[in-house]
Amino acid sequence: MANALGADLLRVEQADINMLSAYDLIGFGSGVYFGKYHKSLLELIDRLPVLENKKAFIFSTSGIRKIQFIHDFHKPLKERLLKKGFNIIGEFSCRGFDTYGASKIIGGIKKGRPNEKDLNQAENFARVLKDRK
Ligand SMILES: Cc1cc2nc3c(=O)[nH]c(=O)nc-3n(C[C@H](O)[C@H](O)[C@H](O)COP(=O)(O)O)c2cc1C
Image (cartoon, rainbow, N blue to C red):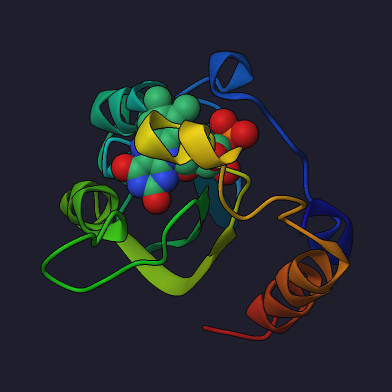
């Protein structure tokens, strides 16, 4: 995604909340843990100032797909971003190898993910974001 957008790629601990306002478009993403994005990412967004109409996209890897009302891990992140004035122009999610909990007994689920196809889809997703308002 970063390559397709020609974007800077930063870990949460490298992101300076004052510096983020200089970007036109910001992608926020992580694996999903206990039905949510990583705590450090949610906390980073809580610390951000209100950035009126700043464009954002979100992305995740998770063992199980997003299921509205039951396993909608994008929701808490989206709510936080909207509160900070972001305009969310895209969402991407794909499966990631998961050995958490009971899945460990069977050697994990979604082995090999994200795979080549997921990465291509992520790149294609990012490419079209450039033209989105
Ligand atoms: C502690 C823990 C909790 C997890 N909870 C969930 C979950 O609630 N839902 C889900 O779909 N996947 C869950 N997973 C699987 C991860 O989302 C998946 O492995 C993801 O690709 C991890 O990304 P990472 O390698 O960047 O940490 C969990 C994994 C771990 C280690």
